[in-house]
Length: 378
Image (cartoon, rainbow, N blue to C red):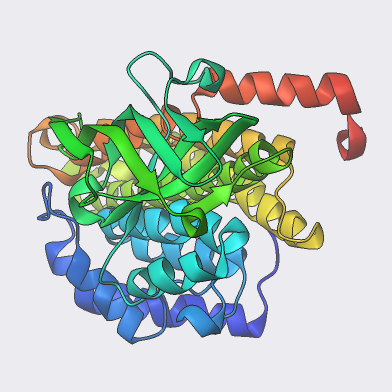
């Protein structure tokens, strides 16, 4: 685990205090409603978007600082951490890194004020991991950009005024910002996933996109999208770590309180080993995530694809294991609908799918090994 600076330790302590005091009571009562009041409170206290420049309402800190905030919040309220993940490390992150100044000024301040979000649309009915088969396209006649296509499995559409859309330009893949109230954008269907959250299928028919809303395009466009996607993967890793931390803390508390055979169940070696294994897996996952974030800043805010994929792969598998064992510690209580562990089990399972499946991460890691060798792993 990396060593935190005194300033980072103060940051974590302050956010933990807010989370325990303000978020704990409603932590598992949000259902399909995003905890916007929590995001607004964090924004008012200066803890939302700490990794964004101050001129847009951010804190001027690093992505590692944003990751630490997510961990501190998610240990108490994973739903709030999930909202922060989307606001700090997904579409708004890509806009700040690669968007036009006009786009940054329009879309970032409302997000960092805790009043809006920008969704991200990548998957299509016939194109998921295989982005090369994407059917969404931009036509450019030299005077205007016209977008046609569809996106599905898009999260936070109901809570966002716009989305960052991955699309094909005549010269290759790129991305643009589209607002949901524009002519030609139509919501087709909302789905409810395993965690009870909504995802959306929408279409775009002859949608005119202003040039200032182009985020990535040209020879470097797809490379920049992948750089932004690596931050999304590290955000997903952080969310997995937060969910696992929340589950482990509840398991530890229950193991000390639940008495069977005249002693707390946490005194039985079988339960002790579950807790020890879970804590070890969680710390290993956090170490991979933090290391990737630190090295990204050493590279000019560009995460290494192997670092990001390793953290994403390990954390996604770790959270499923840790939450499952935490539920096992709770026995039948944890298996009941409405119990925090039952919800965390469903919430954590998404990490093996979102921001690239386990299989995609393994492909990325193997490709890096074949082209670059072991590097500093040797």
